[in-house]
Image (cartoon, rainbow, N blue to C red; front, side):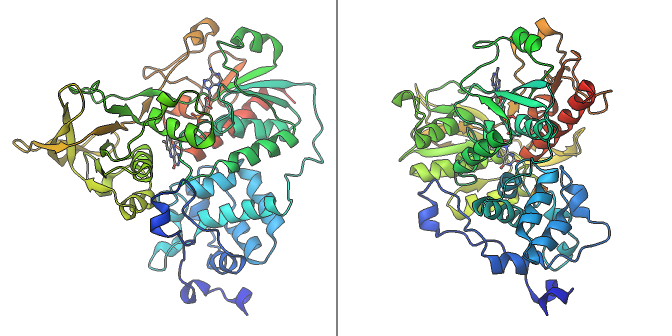
Length: 470
Ligand code: FAD
Ligand code: SF4
């Protein structure tokens, strides 16, 4: 019988959920993976051999109880699996969709040794999506509400992770965000083909039912002042992300036709979601020869959004080789399938054009000595210049911290790179130099991942609970 077969991984191959037809994928702003069926998810989950020391759990930044919920779902105990999954993760269905599993949980699976890792991410997504659709909700019946309340600035994954833990411990979270919907970059950044937006609106309803209050369209520093929050609330958590764009520092970057990655992606999401204020804000790449500079998740999202907008061609230039790309391998493979051409070991040195972008000058590179982070530095090969014709260039070099001007007024200290100093090992986890203020996510660790932001938000909430002594 299937449940007693501990060698299922030999008989059943790893299988990812099926993708939709390529022709539709290249046009539509909807998720590209079809959901697993119940039979398939059980077969896949049962491939887990429940190793004594599950490396997947250690490698997962929120330390999900992966083998345990794989077992529960493989035995048909869906609601128990959902309950367990929510003990460690505030947004499991989001992580199941957007985590770079090949570098995290699945990358650490013992079965990688020749058999193919268990499909952990797709199973995590299935558990929550299906349980919520069947009416399961987080169990708040034992929560005893205290008289404490905490202001949270930012409804991104860090802020939501913090709100989740506070609410479950009876402390009222009030979340302020300048955007009209929760999610931060999950809503206004990551495109729909990776994460459809109804996932976040459903989460807003669930968090609201749990007792989290959202004050959207409200910018702290403009619509409400930090001083008021510090006066009215018992503590403040900041999960405000990183929003300064990195520049290449080469000539031609300000030519018309050169765009920063995030405004391009946001303008596309705003049009799709009906949030567009002014038609002129939309960046339309239909029929254009597009060059995307960069090799991370943001660059992949720009590539694939350009394809869906109907660009004439999309070329992605990255200064290291494919092996050294920082983003998820799955998304690189998806971009290739959808028709993106990759130029590896190419570094931009100038954007050329007369009054508008006409091309980009690239030089070839080879990888030299390792830098302080252990990544090999690209070195320019002399005499390797070439010009690639282009009508539009999207710059996706990443993000730097964007500290608010009011941090100084409230004694919130920054490190040399502009990140908020909030050590995990502080007396109260993730407390800043202002004892009443905590912080986490990208603004503390620098641009990283959804799952690490969730984890820091949750840990900061533990620090706040200790600080409030509830
Ligand atoms: P954010 O998600 O940036 O949220 C910050 C929130 O704070 C925003 O909603 C903002 O409006 C709000 N805010 C800021 N200042 C104020 C203020 N003064 N008042 C009120 N509200 C304020 N990670 C992955 O794991 N997988 C991926 O596939 C992936 N793809 C990505 C694609 C793109 C295009 C980008 C840009 C990032 C991607 N990331 C991905 C990274 C991931 O999205 C971030 O690491 C994560 O969202 C950081 O969470 P956060 O809560 O710290 O900040
Ligand atoms: Fe894997 Fe991310 Fe889920 Fe952890 S949260 S199990 S790393 S998909």
